[in-house]
Image: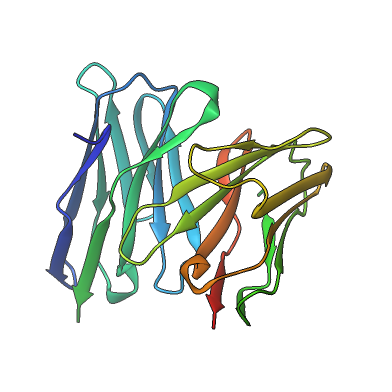
Length: 108
Length: 113
């Protein structure tokens, strides 16, 4: 069993839909990252959070430390949101442990 | 925000040659740089951790003589793939930890022919 599990692995949505990607982890962490990887490979950090909730534009990330669970929400999804979304946790020694990623496709 | 510039973005080389990949921190000092490799449809795999002024720490199964890492300054870390073979073809990406979390280079797609 992976230390970081994401669901779903693949997600197809229509433009405008509300999207949720989930991440569960089984190890102790100091923080959690949500990353976006574009088709060309480049990776952008969307959020780093260790508690509560953060919002940036149409993106919202939440984390529940007790339940070891985080969610990434995208409101009013758009085709340009199509990418791979990766949950990564920061464990001891500042090491990042990655989930398998969620491939999101938003159709116009 | 903190930016890591990675070059080249794409390189094709012949089998047996060496390729150097550079990662520069543009507006902060990166005492530690992490180097990852990613095969198609797979997660990023940590190869090694480089620390400025000291030897890199390699993950189990990563050949340190094949993947040479140098972190000679607080703003530059390099990964050299020596005697490259087709099985080294992959996507290589660096990352540094800042006060705002991790920031990533844009990645290097290496193809060995």
